[in-house]
Image (cartoon, rainbow, N blue to C red; front, side, top):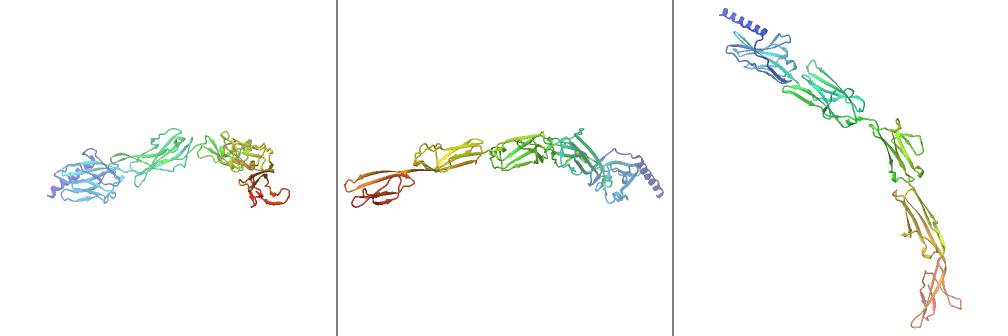
Length: 480
């Protein structure tokens, strides 16, 4: 019995060795697995009835085999070879399916399932491919700003831990950027970690910006292969501040040009439409050919009418780029003649003039004792009723709040004029004598008896009319 068994074992060993060398069997079969998952490789062979055992091996780059798992069909036992990289990671099922947990990049090999009978060795090779999804790409080392007409480093797009390595693409506003001499320059670099065998991909973008790139988003993506095919992951958007030179200068006047009046402060603001905007300018005042260097604001205090004129500002390093604004300092002068308190005699003539000098259209209003007059006063022959407080007020239509006023207080004096009237009572028992006195200042009135010269009464003056006072005998005693 023993002598018969030896040739049989020798035959199996020979068959096994020949299988290692010749590797007959099925064609190429590939299993795709994600990094860290479990690799499952069916044997893909029909198990023969006279099977002795099954084995799994993998091939080194030079083609030499490394056996890793053994399963006996008779003893139902499983043994795993002492291969350090697969320690505690293998599982061989009854149908000779081999599973490898925690897939690594180093598991990318050609594995072979071998089913051995007494007279034959059957083989089924399986190629393992391992894929690792890269990290989400990120734009790093971003430029603080881009400048028009200058090719500048925009940033780097980096994606880590990929297998196999992926390809990076740059986008401007969703459209693919491609190399263009002097405008777009894209470089690509990949590095593999010697321990994990995972790749880090980096792409650098140099870009010449234009003003059209203001608020334009830039992104990048990494295209990679996974177990199910190609996929793409996109970065977050990046928007860059675009620097561009000033192309136009403007000047502003505060307060607004149509509201400046004498005594105001004027602030001139010069602005350039570049980014960043200019911080200093040259300001040119009316009649002064040399500019005054200042920040973007220049202030004149307590301006007078002679400050009216053209104000200009320009860039310091490009004086031909200039802006100007015409400024009018509004004024309003009023001259009333006569003014103050004036005393005149009744019947006199009094010319009154209110002269206006203004930078624009002025309105004139006359008031007497707070009542508006329809026209300016004119006195060819003064009357007592002409006396009063006169005000000439003017306002400039162009400037709200610019008003002037002067006043005249007119006093009309005259000698007293007396007029007496008599009225007899219908009963004939009494008479009423009325004394009308007109004059200014207020005259004093007294009554005397004709012929005697004695004063019988002294009463205060009341303008225009005097009321009678009677005694019991009907004789006049006096009246006001």
